[in-house]
Image (cartoon, rainbow, N blue to C red; front, top):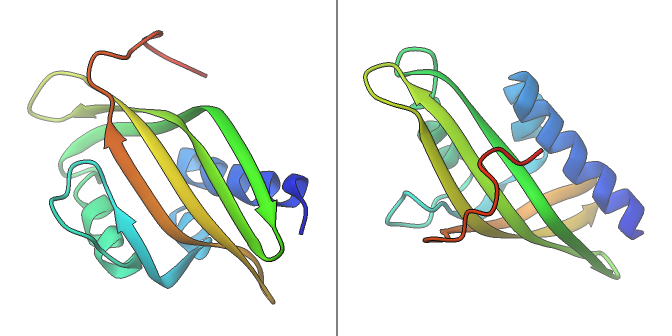
Length: 135
């Protein structure tokens, strides 16, 4: 239950998404997680988030990436908190390229199976792009 362990779990989730390993990515998220994504007008659980991410698949998008930066980690007992900035980069099949800067916060819990994501909130950061392609 250390910051280094939380950082490792977070990085494994980020790496799984970057490689297109959706099983690995979703494996880090509890089924009853509370997720408020920046382009959804309502809260979803893991299943709802999976349906949302499925929209970004090859039928509609040539590709996308979620690039976190300036992350901060804290651990108190079995609870972990991660905050930072992120850039969503994507190329829809029928339109131009998208860059969406955002803030995010995540809550994690240390379980018998390791660190698991229990909450994730993302909000757009209007006019706060300091680099076009972080990371």
